[in-house]
Length: 76
Image 1 (tube, one colour):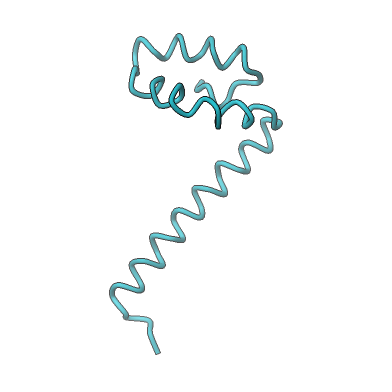
Image 2 (cartoon, rainbow, N blue to C red; image 1 turned 120 degrees about the vertical axis):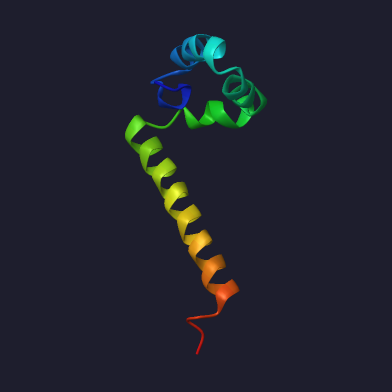
């Protein structure tokens, strides 16, 4: 499991150590954004799941909007 799925800060640090050997770039990313990441752990796991899935949905919507705007097929 990833650190962002950890139930608390201590578990997130442990998971970062485990993942660090295999994926050092991911762990560097976590450490560089640690100040923004730690408050995220204050939310319940279910709320974090909604936040992450909402961000993914918004990303897809933005890509669709860009594609439609660039091609202009659906303009009136």
